[in-house]
Length: 469
Ligand SMILES: Cc1cc2nc3c(=O)[nH]c(=O)nc-3n(C[C@H](O)[C@H](O)[C@H](O)COP(=O)(O)OP(=O)(O)OC[C@H]3O[C@@H](n4cnc5c(N)ncnc54)[C@H](O)[C@@H]3O)c2cc1C
Image (cartoon, rainbow, N blue to C red; front, side, top):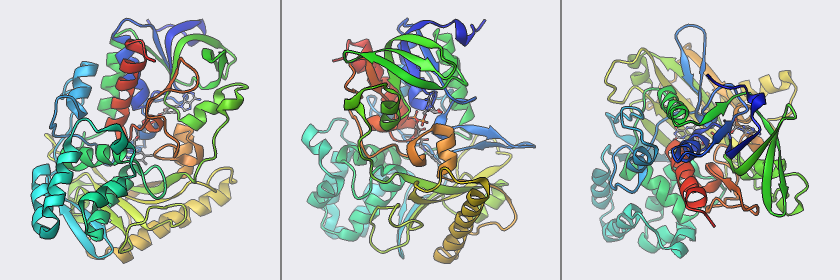
């Protein structure tokens, strides 16, 4: 029988947040007999990628467009690594293949990305013959499991320009990567670029049908391994002394002593919980990247008519500059769950349209002002896509739909300004200035659901299970 939270006094490892990175770190640690406790603010697991119920038959996936790393190219990377390390199977964390190519579109220039990675290699080599040698060399680099540290830290554009001389091709390759995980305006490190590109296109996207079975599998496995998850358990402070954390404090005032604290809530957000630690004051953040998204709930037939591709990555200008806070409603992601090879016919499919923007200005509004702002954003998103992609998208006029904003993301994750990829400030090592406080998830560089799972495992392995630093 599950014990009550208020009887809990200490744990070997206290995990902040029951998103994918927190759950995977917790499961990994619990498998080694450690006393692990996950404290989650909300009533459900999943964080940025959870689900909620709507009247009738609908279970909405709050984040999910597609997942990545469907087709492994190495046992040491992606889903084979996740399955092996967490002791879970492809039946417990299923991914179904797309049945149509995705589309990258920059202004009027398009690149269809075939379902299989090697086909994309050959397609670009054929479409851009003058770039073929450089492209093949870049592809080989993107496939590598290990990157030399200096190269990993180099800005992505600089590395792409070493291999390719065609600015349009470079932008076509950058566009989907930034829409999936461009955590800072301008550029990101080549390490993260490689991780996302490889996950999306070399291993390829897939769809789980719904995110709920993935979360159910993780939570069940964690409980079976002896770990505990407590919901409605917001942590409001992390106590520390002499460079080590000692305990976390809950909103209720309860104090739980901790051997280690693993935080998935974000770096800036974690710093705010550290009491009187001047060195850990939040650093100046660049404007957070967030999104407005409308999800339509359709029959599979209706969804297939709405969009012919599983994913569309679209930027309205001919050149790709990534600064959604300065230039909102320029970049869009569209996903359509009608185009996946599900073993059973789904009752309904989600068609999602999203525009990227800065997250500032969405919090602290009174309800009327917020409703007006949300409605204006929803209407602009639809109107601009209808105008900019005529013939490609058929956005339904009267289907059941839901719109989320940066405020929604903030409400369900507590990320500053509803940041969807975390802050611009990352700790790729997972370390902080406190020797037993570690970061996992977005701010450790784990982007997307699979990235978050890997982040939790790697930090648990390297920083706690093997004795760490
Ligand atoms: C709209 C949207 C669409 C997305 N689509 C996709 C997609 O299609 N495919 C994909 O792979 N990825 C997608 N992502 C990204 C993906 O969801 C994230 O990368 C991933 O879920 C991050 O997981 P995490 O564990 O690092 O963090 P989070 O999911 O942010 O988890 C952090 C958890 O910590 C909890 N928390 C915060 N503060 C506290 C506190 N003080 N005390 C206790 N608990 C706290 C939060 O409630 C949350 O549950 C999407 C994200 C969004 C927002």
